[in-house]
Image (cartoon, rainbow, N blue to C red; front, side, top):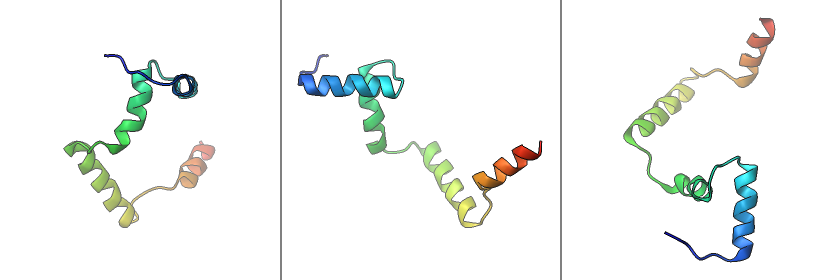
Length: 72
């Protein structure tokens, strides 16, 4: 399938493709569409688990991970 787009849009998509290190214009489009698609059941469960861990303070901060890494 082909889409008719303005030259300005094509230039913007080309720039994004390079900046995001994507392989195709299709990948550029999906990059923006994915945020609006419903999550799979597996992704929704993982998101819910992560939120529960966060609420229970069962997460590790990035600073703590860095500190542990610097010790080793």
